[in-house]
Image (tube, rainbow, N blue to C red; front, side, top):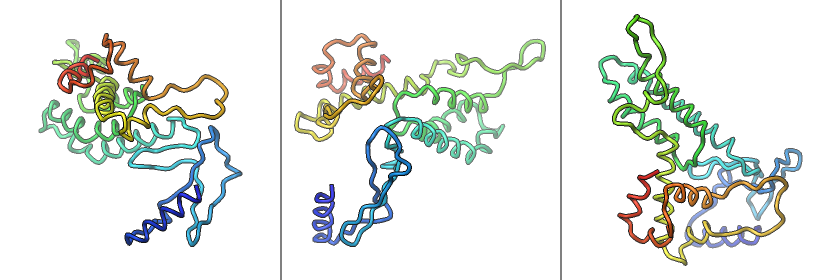
Length: 238
């Protein structure tokens, strides 16, 4: 790793680029957090700090490989967006349909950014939609909260988990059409070596998406990804 970083520093300087020491961290993928064993690594004039979690391109990655930290970060970011737009979403002069479109455009997109299927996102989405839509007034003038089905509206909109699955399947098609030498395809198909960790292995991204495709009743999916239009139709089945 030190050798590679030295090469990056050297090649970068040749182009007039310099590593941002404050934004460059080191993280070991060791399946557990070694709180007492963290250390900094000094390379030439740079000192790189070792961390347990790091945000890369808007996605929080943790050293233990679990999603808990990422989920929490997404919900917190979406929650901040909700409260920043709360006055707008509570404005009685704006229709509920428009409010839901505002939610889909601003808040839901933050929650879904680079996301996988996470049931806790359903809980958060229903909380926001109930706040936007408000309760239902019954014939006896009693109010009740909306059911999950009523929150979806008519015509029925797909909930956030279904939407994420659709996007993942569409992205799978893009990856498989990119060619065998594509870096992104090589990474998706890559199988790391080494000793397996204890316990039940976590599902890989590719395994989860292929299972979604299988549940949609699609056979020989690799060949079908070549037809972009057909693959888009398949993703809408989820």
